[in-house]
Length: 359
Image (cartoon, rainbow, N blue to C red; front, side, top):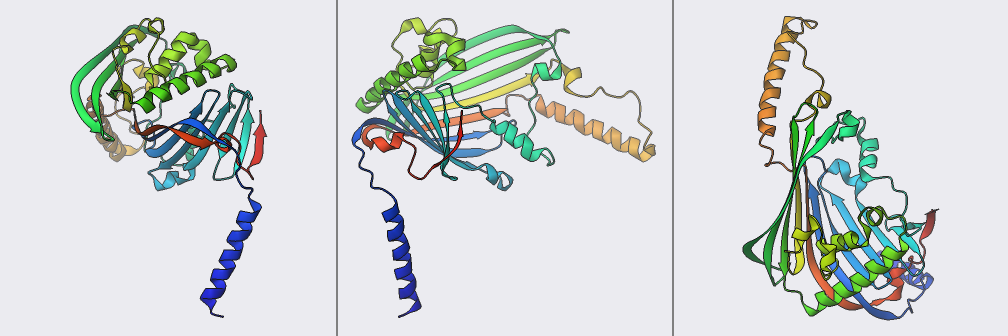
């Protein structure tokens, strides 16, 4: 018997054994809203990564599969294949790690998370980072007040084709100014670009199913921070803003949310960018400049310090063109929306997964 044939028979035996050990999925199939999308994240405050997402939704349950890949070789450790299953009927959430084949079981309020930023900090404390580090006013020890808060939605009239569907563009600009005690201001500009289309029958069906899920989730997620912060109307308005549900209730759109009602159609693509011009809290942001020349390292050191100060000033001039570089840029583009027949097992913990934590 040749080596190739022996290997083939061995491989076949292993495959058959694996199939025999995994039970046949006899769970029924039921109508399910299915959405597929691609996403990317980058910017001065974020490592570059991209991913794919699939969302399965029924009236009392939802599963989100997310596969994320980082651009940097040094960040490959953070690549992930994860799924989140929310079962309102069981009042449970399961967080699946598909690489490790384990899961966490949590209440409807969700698991206590160690954020990705915290993970990045732990990994990179001893490494040089390319991205800048964001500091809150509280962390800087700087007291500020909200000086202005402007929100505007504009239908641009531009059109393009996304996934074979005609789409129309809307832009959203949210501009805030925070002033320190000296009157210096930080200007934050959050820009959204929406491309929306006339909803198809599948999209309308998805909206209805998603609304049923969001309403059932809202009733059970007692400690959800968005629920407690916004209330039901605000929460559902935010869900509509993201395209998860249809805008149906005018009462949801109060204050700045009222402007969002100008956006018509089903969002196929959402782009978010955050820009900042930082003039406030300069003393707290960076160490105070030393007066005169620092001669502690001799004349050569002083000369190098002067060159460094010059280059720093040039950098400040470049950064002043603040609208050119986004602190955070996020793009989410829908590639598929349909009502499909999906096995009930999709909303259960997969066979063979090990419980890693219960909260």
